Length: 302
Image (cartoon, rainbow, N blue to C red; front, side, top):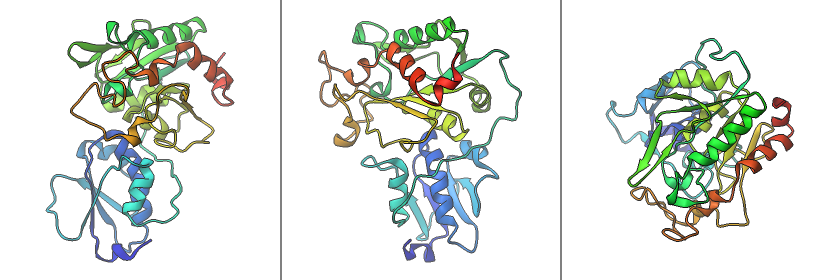
């Protein structure tokens, strides 16, 4: 580690995103261990309760309220490498190894008596969604999730969609929660955590909710083919299943500068028949089969 910490008394994470913040916490904790005094760390104030009491030598503060000084270290999300590696590099860490984050549970009782799985369908750009093969002519997301939810119903597992919105997108297309799932929509973050922490496992996208499940210690199946498989969590974790398809266009996130102002950003095939083919190629049948074949997930299925 470099000597930069000799003059640092505050660290400010410039992104407010849920997943980015969760991934950041164990990295800044490792950095803070080199200090003899607690390090003030500024993050999204709404997320502070997730981490209180879990990370040593850190005082969490609202990253919009303190006066920035020359001793403030600003940390950014870097698009060109795995998220924790990007943070570690800015802290001057060498040979950094992935650290699984931790968050507080809800402290609430199990919300459903029978066996259930949780998932979330929404994200921050259409390229991150599990898009349907028929493209914009249909609900891009609903059919895939609806079919998968039906498969769980057939094996007596309740599919529970935990999300902020029932419907989300940009005109003229919106992604709707599936009709075959129990939909827990627009609840508090702690309510969402309650459903996820008591579920058998979680299925999600490249999104903050997947990081929530991972940080709770839940097995996570992530459908994410638009970015490199080394992004998000570390490969090889025994309760992590990453579903990709290298036979179609994939991994555009690293090789092309993301345009956050374009909801339908698809740098190579936008407005063509191949738009979002990275996720259209992944079928509900394949997801279920990979769950059944995975050493960890198959033990959680009938």
